[in-house]
Image 1 (cartoon, rainbow over the protein chains, first blue to last red):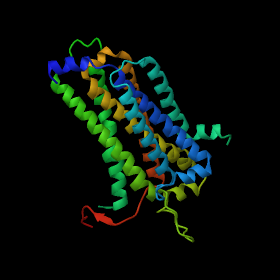
Image 2 (spheres, rainbow over the protein chains, first blue to last red):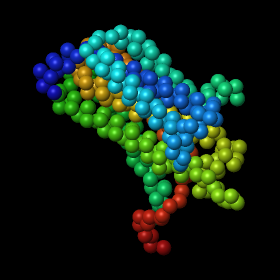
Image 3 (cartoon, rainbow over the protein chains, first blue to last red):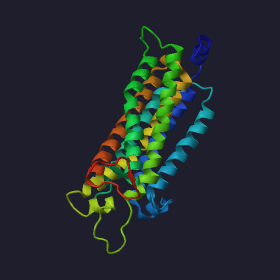
Image 4 (cartoon, rainbow over the protein chains, first blue to last red):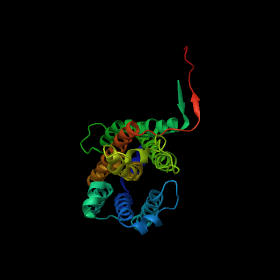
Length: 115
Length: 189
């Protein structure tokens, strides 16, 4: 990277980075929600079985990846030249990241389902 | 010295891709910290920044290859259903674990968490690689963005660590076996 390139990157607003961070948080949160929902609901678990050898995991991860990429695409476009409140973006993203870890953890899933 | 194809592919999934991804973390975290530290006395050279971006790109590829090979190649072998009447469950790891209450939680907790939490790692590290590539040294002007990048990098490390550790334990109690036998080396006796 040349000195001029470094100067150019310095002028980038925080919007594109914030979009990637929030989309990443949403992706992790959706992973947790989908994993939990497919475990709690037999009907959803069956619907998520889009590739039988892998079972419901195939649908859960496919939905997660699609949601993550679509959200990132639209947020990236919307915030391409904007400066956003990155503090709020971080707060929501970290919360969703925690949701991703907790709702994929079987003992916590069982606790929520009263098992 | 021989190995089955399923053993070999499981080793490639865990040790070849997953472990390599884990090994790259210490260097990546150090690189991310160095490029983004606001008080750094010496900034990274252009060459070092390029190396960091390439390393992160390689980690992204490794992370996605690890989860896809796990979910679509190894996991179907793990969860295979034995035909009716089969009593030897050695080739059916999930059923083998669930057949004994001393090992069932390795599946109910270990595999159930591993198969899902592992997917947080590629999502998180892809975001980290994108932001570092997009902003480079300019990320020092966005300290909260730097905090998010480091947090997600550590989360990817934690998710990979949990998945990798349970993968190692699961492979100890109920290894994925089967397929053709590959002779790596012929012994003298």
